[in-house]
View 1 (cartoon, one colour):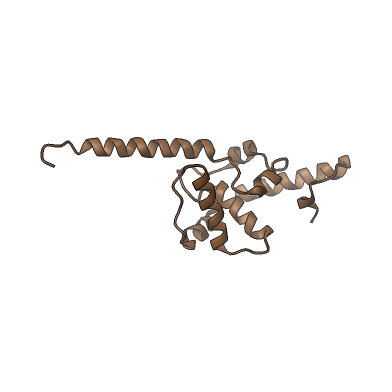
View 2 (tube, rainbow, N blue to C red; view 1 turned 135 degrees about the vertical axis):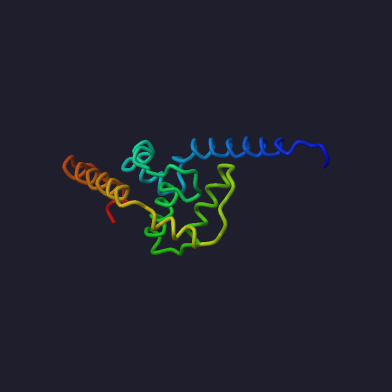
Length: 145
């Protein structure tokens, strides 16, 4: 279109992207799967947000990838496609654009899970198990497998 300012579209697009980024940031701790709910006492959202090293706005940040990976493990080594399905489903229910079904991005993101992040998660789970054993608490069934 002649004489129509192109910056109008760029501004609208930036506003839209900013809205998506804010929504994603506010929802990053929402459970990706039922496992996040089952482990809420052991791995609370506040703890995971505090140790999350993800700084960029990604579909495959540390928290979604961690929960999808854990679901893969707990479901008997489920496929990467199933893990992406968890992430896509979560994105759709939160009103976010879902990532593609390409498993390569998810697998690369799994490799990016930092050792420091996983060490802190493992330490937290170990401390919770030890505390429950000392206090004679009944542990959630998922933790006694």
